[in-house]
Amino acid sequence: MSLLLLFACTSADIEAPAPTPEPTQTALGSGDGELDTTSAQWSYILGKDERLDDPRDLGFDPLGNLWIANRKDDRTFIVSDPGSKEATSERRKDGYAEHFMEETAAFAFEDESGADNFGNEFGSCGESENTYNDTARPDRFMGPVLWSAELDIFAEQNPFGLGSHLDMLHESPLCVGLAWEHDNVYWVFDGYNDAIVRYDFETNHGIGQDDHSDGIVFRLSEPKVARVENAPGHMEIDRETGILYVADAGNGRVLWLDTASGEQGDKLRVTEEPISTFAEWDGVEWGELVTDLDQPGALALDREGNLYVGDFETGVLHAYALDGTELQSLDTGWGKGAVYGMEIGPDGALWVVNHAEPAVMRLGTGD
Image (tube, rainbow, N blue to C red; front, side, top):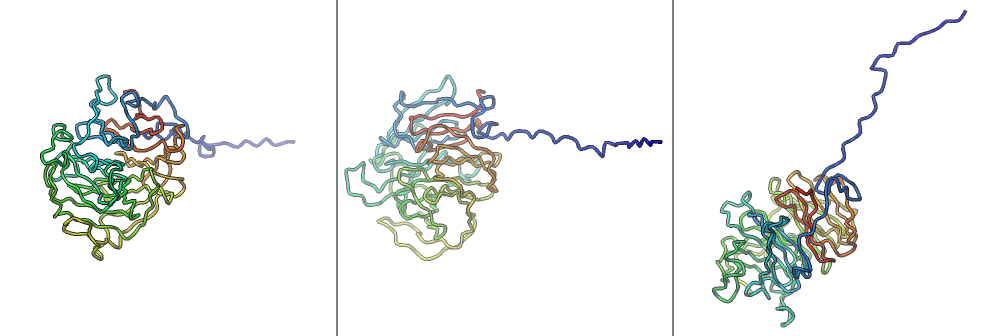
């Protein structure tokens, strides 16, 4: 006699198949490593045909105009309606560009979110020791410059023979990175002193003038950074948290630091300009966010809290959460030395300087 045993199985006894995870979607699209053209595509904005030559960085003003730093001739490209069929571009050279725009390496534009007295301004800085385009001995009298992004002012007015700049401070030659915090406050990657420096222009001196007496400059004693010659070392600041992100190309890492931390230290020797304060800033809270890249150089930060890093050595773009978790990567295929400036545009797409082509490219949907 045999017994037939029947066991009833309930739904609790059966493991449901694991759901297929949704692909990560950032400004790099939904692929990983290679481009998924169903979610994002590269599009050409401008390049050699428009006389782009040695472009280094880009940025957007609050009206949506695209600005491109063209290092070869100290000129600036301004593109209206970028990416549209109605786009137009022009090349401008400031009246004293051989100093104020010499070897421009980085732009940083303000927006209405962080300015008590919004004035549609931006900063620039150059990887220069002030040679006036190799016509003079380097005196290292260089640093960040404050400009108006108003199109009837920038490179249009020159009332005193010093161009259209609004202000300049001179404690950071060989600058390769720049970030705007609020009002007239900017952070600089000082490649000559291997330091991060905070600049406050206070009240600008007006178009083409030269009063720097209210400038406040603090050079951080830590962390130390390292410039790679002719490579970006860009910076981005999250103004909601006050965290500054720095591409430390020479040390192969991306840093974070709390801009609200630290205290004033010893006074520093000022160059040949009368400014209000120049001192060390000690005790800043900082750390390493990413340490496994070759030469991180270009940075961009989107509204969702994703940080994009361009590896100058490999041409690969990486997307990270702000805890350092890598979300995606994308090999541009452009190779070493191609990825310079990056920015998230008003459209949410990633706009990138391809120095090798040269060209400015947009990565996004066709919308």
